[in-house]
Length: 455
Image 1 (cartoon, rainbow, N blue to C red):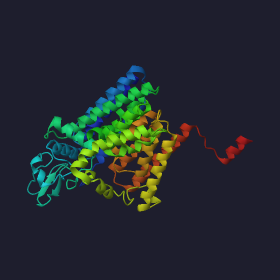
Image 2 (spheres, rainbow, N blue to C red):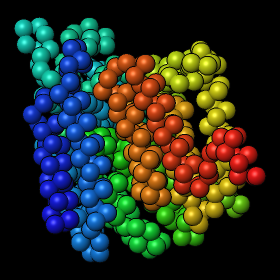
Image 3 (cartoon, rainbow, N blue to C red):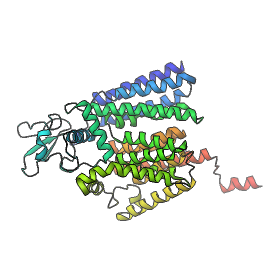
Image 4 (cartoon, rainbow, N blue to C red):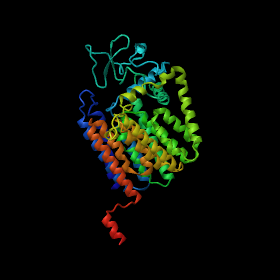
């Protein structure tokens, strides 16, 4: 009965996931109407929580089968329609297309007329009566000519922001699937990576004597399904690579772990926050291997494009408000303006130093959890897919309370209210702190109770 009940919950999760992707329509950035999506997302997280609780009653091989089958079912359901909260995968496709045509993705912006021959109909549909119509379609002026260009690519007038390892993935996908395939290649990659992470977690948890059922924290997560598969964010690949790096270092293979870390950083840059927990008292091998691999991946693009290899990264940081500190929604309450940036840097640096000092690379999981989780709470990005790095570390430690972080970031994406976002992050922080105190076995008593105890 416990297996049946868990199966029913997973089936409902898969159906709700497919519904959120296929039947609710795409997020319309002009109207900001996505209340049904919010309701279904809440339902998905509730089903996720219930499924994890139900899994506690299933033991042995059946629990492992359920984890794998649930990961596959929810992942396939997440491919039921096009991206629904992001258009980033359109840029992935374009970067892959231009590379396979022998053009660096850092050389031209997507709207540049020099690449007009490479434009595919699904990425660059023709205007209708002088207007751009259709979901995911935006209007831009073609550089030089001023002609109207309709495109599914966001920020089509700026160069790509993605690092070289990501660009290699994009090119590889389009090499095998061609230019006309729309969103499913990136979604399929997300599904395969999700399954790969689940398998790695199951093996690592079993080998370390931990509960393998914790792998469901990743495999059944609404965050992984929606942002890793439906919206196909490349962050899911960097999460896999960081998990692999951490597993390798934990097993004593520091050169290999450092190399995997270097590829992960060259995929999205953000995984650099996973380095402190892997360094220990002998950091040289990890540092040398990661830097060497990072440079090897960057050098061909630097030779071709020079400083342009930075792409839109400087502009993105300015656009998002990180240069001025306005994006730090919690820190700006006490340190407005540029002071928030300074305070954020100090908090992240202090956390990194503490994690480096306290973490044993042979058991780096709690250090990774704290480093990544604290950084996300300090930086408070608008994009929940950044938390894909955190979820495997939650699974490896079993500290489920840290799921409050991706949940709070998801709320921030779906509901455009800074006040509500601050409340969500504050609740997440309080919940994590309270649960951490309980796990440590600390008891908080009043002065009166303490006096009675002494007496």
